[in-house]
Amino acid sequence: MVGGRTRAWDDDGFDDAVPFLARLENEDRVALLSSGRPLRYQARAVLMHQAEPSAHVLLVLHGWTKITATAANGYEALLALRGPGDILGEGAALSGRGRAATVTALEPVEAIVIEQGRFTGFLAANPRVALQLLSLTTDRQRTTDRRRLQWAALTVRERLAVLLLELVRTHGKRTTEGIELTIGLSQHEFAGSVGSSREAVARLLTELRAREVVVTRRRHIVVLRPDVLRRIVGEGPA
Image 1 (cartoon, helix red, strand yellow):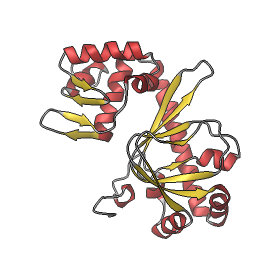
Image 2 (cartoon, helix red, strand yellow):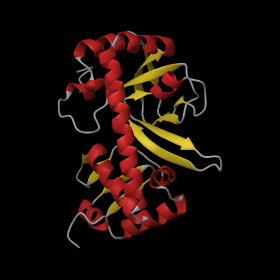
Image 3 (cartoon, one colour):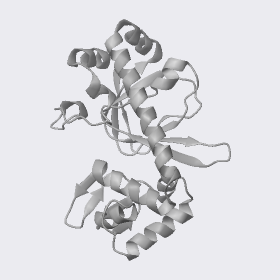
């Protein structure tokens, strides 16, 4: 516990999305965290910029971030959400290439920053940690491949329903109104996640709102009928 808050790596309920710090032995985790220094970021602050040279990695302690990449034509894709226990910027730090994506805080973020040379030196001296990082990279790639295959077989409506159900599971808070998504994403960000236009996502959210499946406000969604979302993606009775 830190300041009364539970940290991601304090929970032994591991699943296939286990964050990096939760994979480490306690002594390795303590040593790694001790090799950096704490930083805080305000909501919507950019932590890392796409294509910039790598100088450090970040270990997220509290708060959530979004990972986005912009194509040559200006289209911005939402690649992932990363939160407590996750590592950011490790790919560029290890390859020596520019960063592949931009990282932006969705809420106030507390992190540990570790200079690139110190991080790579730590991995060289601690093979157990290096193997866990390799395991994380493999799991993330498998998730990306699985999502790419899944997305190819779904309509945009089905992709949006899948995304909303995932957010209900990972960032849902039950309230008297329904299940509130604690991560505030814009329609543009939803569009970037499901591979569509903002206009198409806006129309679909309007449809779901009219059917009283969701309530939407600025960067705020409450899911009222997850059962309807499951039916849209074929997970429930027709």
